[in-house]
Image (cartoon, rainbow, N blue to C red; front, side, top):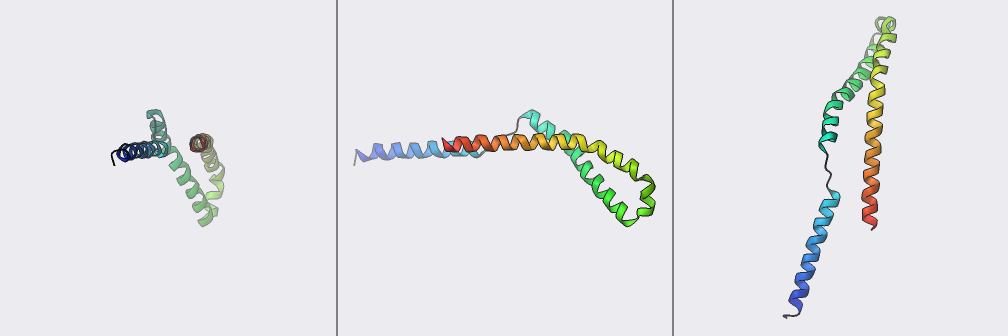
Length: 108
């Protein structure tokens, strides 16, 4: 009985270490810079989405009123599209890199 107790304690400690390793592997953290970037760019993305919805809605409900001003409206929409597309693509690349890193850690 005495010999099996250290083995059980060692197995228990190994299990606890494995659980902690898995918790650390699955947790997601943001740095301060990432958090501030999301906070500052979220309104830009929401404005882009809302502007797109408004353009489509106004153009389909009353095309005669919107048609003379559509070129100006589309210029405003295009102004938002550059920064929003760049931010979303960078965010997507970072998420893919994080997923690849996690899958590489899981294979080890």
